Amino acid sequence: MNDKRSIYAWAMYDWANSAYATTVMAGFFPLFFKEYFSASADVTVSTAQLGAANSLSSLIIVLIAPLLGAIADAGGLKKRFLFLFAYLGILMSAALALVAKGAWEMAVFVYVLGNIGFMGSNVFYDALLPSVAGEKEVDRVSGLGFALGYLGGGLLFALNVMMVQQPDWFGLSDEVQAVKLSFFSVALWWALFSLPLFLFVKEPKNEALKGTLQVASEGYRRLLKTFKKVSKLKGLQLFLVAYWLYIDGVDTIIRMAVDYGMALGFDAKKLITALLIVQFIGFPATLFFARLAQLWETKKAILTAILIYLFIVLWASVMDETYEFYLLAVMIALVQGGIQALSRSYYARMIPSGYAAEFFGFYNFLGKLAAILGPMLVGIVALTSGSSRAGIASIALFFILGGGLLMMVDEKKTARQVRDALDL
Image 1 (tube, rainbow, N blue to C red):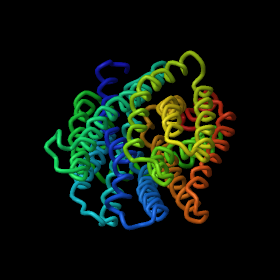
Image 2 (image 1 turned 180 degrees about the vertical axis):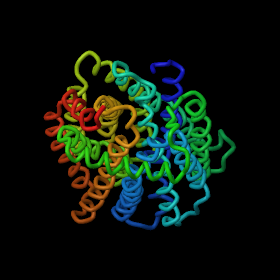
Image 3 (image 1 turned 90 degrees about the vertical axis):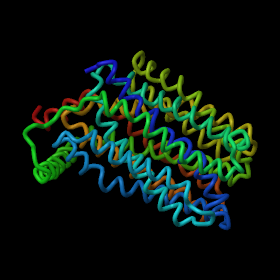
Image 4 (image 1 turned 135 degrees about the horizontal axis):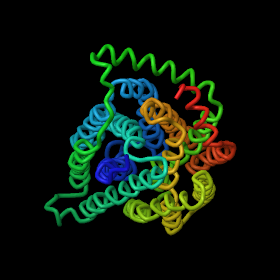
C-alpha cells in the first residue's frame, strides 16, 4: 500500500486512455461525425445520432459492469478485465481510421465499441485504487490519475490538432487524412502507456478459487449479496443517486460541448483550441482540487464544483460569442478533473478494498446510466424544441438535484454501515 512505483504506474493508465477521451470522444469524432461521417444530415439530426451512440455504449456498460466487477473481485481478475476492455478500445480507435465518408452507421458501430472498451476498462481501473492508495492518500492519488490524464491526453491532442491544422508539415495530403491518422495515434498511445500498470500494479489474488465456472458462480453470488446489502444501505444509496445526477451533467458536457458549439455556428478550429485549454489548465487544477480536499473537506470541494458547473450550463445556454466559449472552457478546466477525482476518492472511502470492483461496478453502473440519460435528453430537447440552447439548458436540473442530495451524505457513517453490512 502507498508504494510509489505502483501509484505512478496506476496513474499512468489515465495518461494512456485519456487520449481516447480527448482526441476521439471530446474532440475529433464529434467534428468528423458532423462534417464527414454524417455530412448530409441536419445539425439537430446528427446531434441526436451522436447522443444515441453515446447512450447506447453507456447502456451496455450499465448492464455488464456490476456482474463483471463481482467476478473480478471473486477471482482477482481486475487487471485481466481492464486489459480486455482496453484492447477492445485500442482496436476500435484504430478502426475509426478505416471508416468511409458518409458511412455514419459504421462510424457509430465502431465508436460504440470503442466507448465500451474505454468505459469498461475504467471500471476496473477505478477498482484498483484502494489497492494502491491508503485512506489518507486516496484523494491525492485519485487526483494524480486525473491530472496525468489531462496532461497526457492534452499532449497527444495538441500534436493531433497540429496535424489537422498543418497536414503538410507531417507529409499528409489533407485534414481528413490527418484526422484518421490521429485516431490511429490514439491506439498506439493507449497501448504503450498502459504497460506500467500491467507490469507494476499488483492485485491480491483469491487463491481459493480455481476454475472459470467457480469464479463466475462466486461472482454471481457476490453480486446478488452486494445488491441486497446496497439496497439496505441508505447512506450509500444517497451518495450513488447524487453522483448519478451530477456526473450526468459533467459527462454530457464532455461529450456534447463541441457538438453544441458547432450547432451555434462557432468555428471548428476555435472549438478545438478551447478543448486544448481544458486539457492544460485541467492538469494543475485537478492537483489543486485534490489538495483543497485535504485542507478542507472532500464533500465541500465537490459541492463547490457543482455550483460552478451550474453557472457554466446557464451561461452556455445564452452565449453568442466565441470568446464566451473560451471563458467557459477555462471554468470547466478548473473543476472537471476535480469533481471526477474527488467523487472517486470520496466513494472509495466508503467501501472495503476486498469488494472494490463490485462496488465500483455499481458506481460506474450509475455513472454510465447517467451518460445514457444526459446525451439523450440533450438530443431529444434539441429536436423537439428546435433549439440546441434548450438542450444544453436541460442539464442544469442534474446539478441542482445532485448537489442537494450530496449535502445529505455522511461518508464516515456510511463507511461504518457498509462494513457492518458485510460483516467486516
